Image 1 (tube, rainbow, N blue to C red):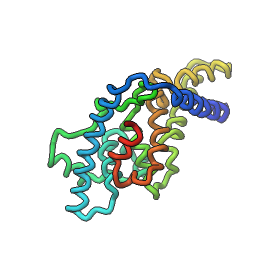
Image 2: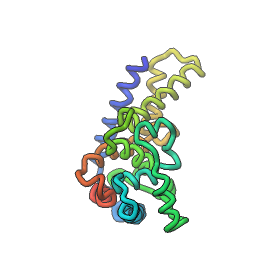
Image 3: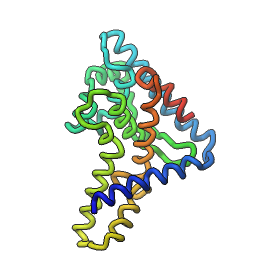
Length: 220
């Protein structure tokens, strides 16, 4: 049953994303302005990373330092460390020494200009970090869609057992209500878009050297 649900659930993500991608721009310049505000903060963080590397002879790529900084509060468990490695805490301290108030948080919005839907930027950066890092001990998919799918299945199994449901149609209906929607779940719309965009961004040849420019080229 769970295998069948997993197949149908991931299939729904792909189908929904394809339909979103064909939509017209619904927000126009306001979306560009919102996204650019976030990207300007990424650019400043990237400048911090470039200076930090030069001053300390650090081999970690500029973009990976930025991704580590962005994901450090939410995506830094032991499982994440196995997938993407430790956070460079010295870089975090370096940034804070330059500007103690600087941060990138959930208040900084990233919006898909084709749909007007918000994308979970911090989740996307954590997932992208796994895709650009070559020596993770766990398959990089588990930092994105596969990991979200597993946690979603846990929600479905809990719902099934709590409510003693045996009707597979009802279970599938509940799964579909959580997947890629605005309802609170581990694989909602903002997560699904983040997972997919992380894969696309990882394909840029300059992703390790110029995160800012990749984001601008992709979203603006």
